[in-house]
Amino acid sequence: MTQPNRIPVLKVAVDSLEDYSNWVLNRIKHEQGTQVTTLNAEMAMLAETNSELRAIINQSDLIIPDGAGIIIYLRLRGYRQARCPGIELAASLLKAWSTIMTTEAIAFYGGEPGIAEDAASMWLQQYPHLKIITNHGYLTHEAANQWQNTLVTQQPKLILVGLGVPRQEFWINQHRHLCPQSIWMGVGGSFDIWAGKKSRAPLWLRENNLEWLYRLYQEPWRWRRMLALPQFLLRALS
Image 1 (spheres, rainbow, N blue to C red):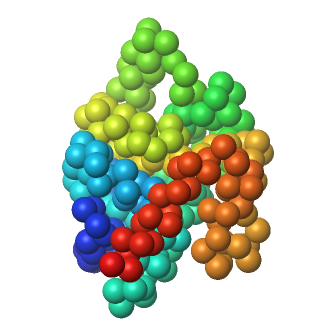
Image 2 (image 1 turned 30 degrees about the vertical axis):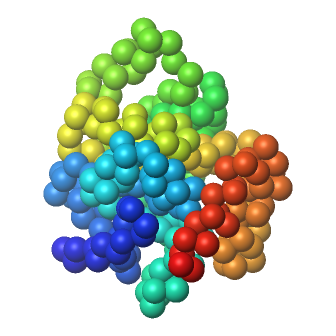
Image 3 (image 1 turned 45 degrees about the vertical axis):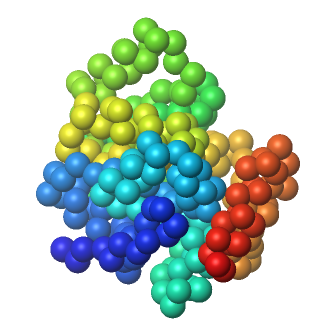
């Protein structure tokens, strides 16, 4: 199996590969537990001052270039790596799962109550043979313990966590021992999109690395967090 080329990005890194999906599927096939981190400019800047997050990112088995800022950073240094949005990698894994892993469970964890269930329903309409267990991200202490017991019992081989950055990275790092042979991946707001609560940017914005602008249009309260992008680009140019 081709090993990714790890490229430094400020105090963290990103992995360069031609096909991230096949790499992850190969890890599933060989029952190699894997933490996938979706790196964007906001996360890279947060890791500058948060040593715990920085360690989690750098210790991940696969770090994909999720954000436009990361791609710009790489291009400024002569790398021609294509962007790999986390939502697209997760979708490609779910599509493959419908044909190669139909008996193995998948877990959706995160979002507001009902969102993970609606996201699972969308996928089940397309691939009825999938087995998806779900839970929302607002659990009581008792419910959280019950969910952990469910993961131990069910041993889902693909666990998608939509708790937002950096909460999902911390949660995965703390709990991946529950399913040591599984793929654990933070997917941010992907459940909201699959559930139909939000929409992705039009294709032309995505192709021009402007998906962040559409996200800001949908969620103007994010403007403070979006300030990380120009700060990151200034660091990239230095």
